[in-house]
Image (cartoon, one colour):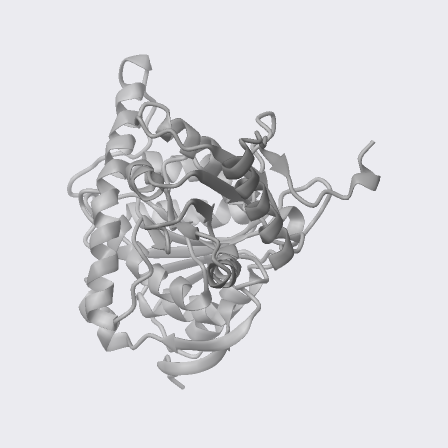
Amino acid sequence: MTGKLKSGRQVVEGSYAVAHAAAICRPDVISAYPITPQTHIVEDLSQFVADGAIDSKYINVESEFSALSALVGASAAGARTYSATTSQGLALMHEVVFNMAGMRLPAVMTIVNRSMSAPINIWNDHQDSMAERDSGWIQLYVEDVQELVDTTVQAYLIGEDPEVSLPVMVCMDGFILSHVFEPVDLLDQKAVDEFLPPFKPVRTLDPEDPKSFGMFVDPEYYMDFRYLVEQAIDRSRSKIQDAARRFESAFGRYYGDLIDTYHTDDAEIILVAMGSLVGTLRDVVDDLRSKGVPVGLLKVRAFRPFPADEIAEAIAGAKVVCVLDKNISLGTGEGAVCTEIKASLYNSGIRVPVIGFVIGLGGRDISVGTVQRIVSKAEDVIKHGIKVESEFVDLKHSLVS
C-alpha cells in the first residue's frame, strides 16, 4: 500500500514535523541510528519509507559514525542525503563531520541539541553542536517547530547551491522542540518541489570521469583546501539571506536570515540568544517594554557563518549587550556566542559593553525571573557604571566546593 505525506495545519510532535520536512525534500538516502532525544525523527522517517510515502533508501547503521559515513558515500555518488543525531552521537561523528565538509559534500542533518557527558544528562543545551563549530558545516538554529520545518527546506537550497556545496546542521532544542505537540503547517509536496529544485551535484564519483575525494595531501596544499571551505562558508551568507526571502515569497513566513531583531532600534539593553530561549525572551521584552524599560532582542539564527557585521549594526546604538549562552567554552568563563561577538567588535569602532551569561546547561530551567535579573544587572551598568563580569547563572552553590 502506498501512503502519502499529508500537508496542512496539524497538531503534531516536533520530531514528526522535522521528519515530514526532511521527507518532503525528497532525500535519496536517509541514514538512521537512534539516540535520545533524536530517535522519533528517524522512526517517523522509517514509517514513511515503509508506507511508500517517500522513495528513499533507508539505511540502518551500526553507530552514529556509520550514519554520517554512509551519507559521505551517498553524497559523493550524487544523492541528496539526510540524517539526524544529538550529543554523544554527534561527538562520535566528529571525524566524519570534518571529512564531509572538507570534501564539499552537501547534506542536511538535524541536530537535536542535548548536553554532553560527563555526567550523563539527556536534556537540552548547545554544547554538542558548538563543539563542531569549526568543522566547516553551516549551522542554523531555530526558535520553534514551524521555523524548524521551514528552515530544513531552506537548508537544502543553501547547502546544495553550487557556489556553496557544504553540509548544513539545522539545530533544534532537545525535548523543548523535539517532543512538544503543537499546531504546525506541514508543507505541501508540490509547493516544495517548486521551491527546491532537484539536486545537481557539483562533482560526483563517476567511472566515466574518475576522481577521488578526500585524498592525502601534503603541507603544500592542505591550507589551500581549508581556505576554500572558508570562502564557501562566506559565500553562504548571501545564500541564507536569499533562501529566507524566497521562502517568504513562496510560503509567507520569514524568521530573519542570519539574524533577527525585535525592538532593537531604540533599545538601551539588547539581549542576544539562539534557539527556543528566544521565545521566552520575546515575552520578557514585551513585559519590560510595557513598564518603560528600553530593552530589545537579537536572535542569532546562523552561527556559521557568523553574522559579525549584522550583529554589530544591530547593537551599535545600545548601551549594554547581554549574551545568554546555552553553552560554555571552558577556560574562558563564557559561552561561544559571547566570545565571538566580543571578537567581532574589537576592530569595529563600536564600544558597547558585552556581558556573557552562561545559562540553562543540562536543561536547567530558564525562568522569566532569571532573565529579569540579568536585565537588572545591565541597568546597573548603565546607571551606576558597575562592572559586571561574565558569569554562570543560577548555580546551585551548595554543590560547589
